[in-house]
Image (tube, rainbow, N blue to C red):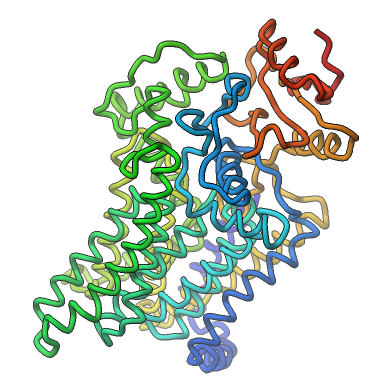
Length: 560
């Protein structure tokens, strides 16, 4: 519904721009003057964007309460956060681990998440300091939006940078799944914004502070999305090296001491800690938890690899997932119909990052360029940013999986920078100026409508299609039963029994925390006669049977 409204408002804006190009000229000029005056106070503008993101998400709590996890990845990140909250980097393998085996979790050589620890560090902070992992997501969202505004200030006038920060708050920091789940995106985007914003500042001033921020951003990316991060950071590193050799005013030695050394040292600290983390988790500083998980289940990442057989699957759910459509289906699609896969990947990214509204400046800009000298319409900054975005997109084209938008989170500041530079170019003509001006107006209208919708019972239904306004799916039933048992005396063991045809991709219940034996509620898979050994091990716990496929979900005492 909101996507259709966005499309209609965008079409109306284009029509008005070419029929009444001076519409609201005096009103817009008055607002822009004051907006620019405020934006010129750069530090205040950055802080305001960050606080706006935090404040709006707090204000939305009555209609968007603290989310319940639903996707496998969320539970895995929460496991890692819980592990860190317990003051350790990995957990010992549980003697009954086969009963708890689940997706995106390693059991050997340690019990740990398969993911990188950057996002979980914020979740752990929220859990330990603020009482719930969600507050770590909330905090990282505010930092991300502030960093995007700061990054844009290095590429364009402060008024446009502040506008970009506000758009990021609306599109990423309110209703989007980055801040309404535990799946990630915000920390990688924060790191990417630091890298992007440091680049023009280092070329201009060569300050050690900016070099440290560059290294910090790269470290944040290494701890969250290292594969895509290489494609994002490498062009910036190469461009800095070329600039250092070409420019004449600053000795090369000075550039090395003030740019390279602080950045390398800062990044090195992050990489050393990451290596130590993997040594504790996998036994080797050069073997990631992700690699261990892929080897365990014979997975591949690229279509030229071959899916390897494994001796056996202990559970039907694991077999259907790792040898069914979620993996093998995508593998065959990538090998035999890659064009279709690439089209779908592009659509997923476009829908989340741009949609009709932010696509409008791109289309209008392209159609208003002169026929001769089209390429000269691209400023050096615009050419570099487009190249940067193309590089990170190339990283997704190589893989077999349907990419989620947070996979290219490091590039989000660059995507906004390109869009805003195009909008700035449109200001040359009166029609283009109204097109650019309509973007924040429509964004505010859509945000207001989305915020009011739940009050009039028009909340969008949960959907796998991810836009800035879509309702994120959550496992409320599991959360309800967990809350019920947590408020029931004693300790509990919940055996999960699925019906044939259960959707293991989006409705998995068997996930546990870092300290399984110390948890009040433990979730285990139904293994038929083998349940006896689990019941004997946890003989002092109350055993329950949950059947997720009944309506309503049935929780009953377990009977052997």
